[in-house]
Image (cartoon, rainbow, N blue to C red; front, side, top):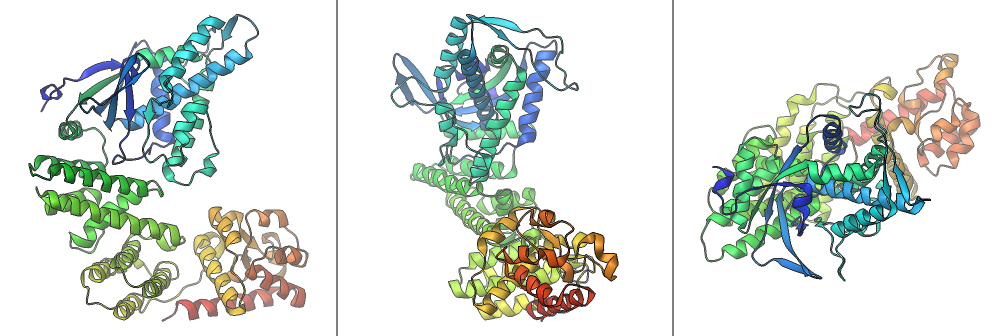
Length: 586
């Protein structure tokens, strides 16, 4: 099928023509901003090469837009079409951010100008860049600069009482994007609470850096507006918009399997000429809006939700499905049934909610094993009473760490058992929580515990997890409060920034012990280990006490009472191993 066969033929437009007299929106049922530094870097490289090559234009992307009938807005004397973006939102969002960065650069030049004629600097790029090093700067008058800035600002933010922005992103609860376009507000990346917000803030900083290094913002603005070309496929029919998306996908454009599934489900609902079709369409929009709102919280949970949803209900076998087979299985269930399309979409929301909860509550390295995560998600989805669910997840966590963190064998042969049990828990509603608990414990039967002699280089993530759990044990045993604040900081940092050698590595030979054994290792607040350096244990005891960590306090008291030598290291190692055996044994 050709694009020319649709109601409105495609248009070949420059970026300036694409943005003229249009306001773009990314619907809630579309994916949030997900481009990373690599994709943005590829776009920057394309733009740089366009300047340095003999080519006068560069095809950027196909943009598919839904323009519903009479969906326009009047701003002063101009009429703007409102366009819902069905495909192309990642590139368009990034280009709008670049345009805002250029506007900021123009405003800065205007503010700093000392004369009526302003010199625009040539680009500043690395020696390996394709840009010409002998580019000379050009000049522009203050009046010309003001005009360019005003036009660009009015393109990005319309001069109406609502200050409508050129592009409305979806799920922008933080208002980072709209605030950036309107006021140039740019919080720190660390302030972002969702993955989508984090990437948006990173994009803003990277685009500002790209514009700054270009040097001449007028030249860059001219290039973007007039030399970047798009195929714009506009339609007033949402069913046709999704068909266009499918045609583009069949031509080999890179589209995620989840996007393909969503589009196929949309087509099923549109194709069925039922009396309640509009209600079904609204339902799907709402469901997928909820799905993408959750997806923006953690990296990779959309793919996981897709494969888990198919594996748990619509497939057999002892492996978690891949994306391709997952889409096939789900669509095989739906066929052409609109009600089933909605049911599958609702199921995906339930699964992604469970996956998101798992990532939020469970610490690494427990969630590093995909098949183990599937079992936990199944427990959550089953809907046991809160107390029973908590006990089952605790049993699951111990089993997973026993097999994959402490196990003295190749655990790959056990992963099929996790998948089988995950399906049984979800689909056999007669299975009680006590029976599930027994089956979970049975998974680890016969798995011997192994503690590495070198826990520093071979077992860092596992060590951090063990000592975190040991801290909880000490708090519970002594009736004290578990220090969540300090441990959250430890989990957010690299393990090397927190693992402390009580007896410094450089002094192990003096007592004839392995300084990397579990008995000589401790976790401290981030970077505290570097501050203490090669000090003797007796000189570090006071610092340990001040950390407010019970495991550090325990070591400090031992040092103050008995010193720290091979005997104390061996005693502590034996104590920790005994606790591990009790906690994770059969």
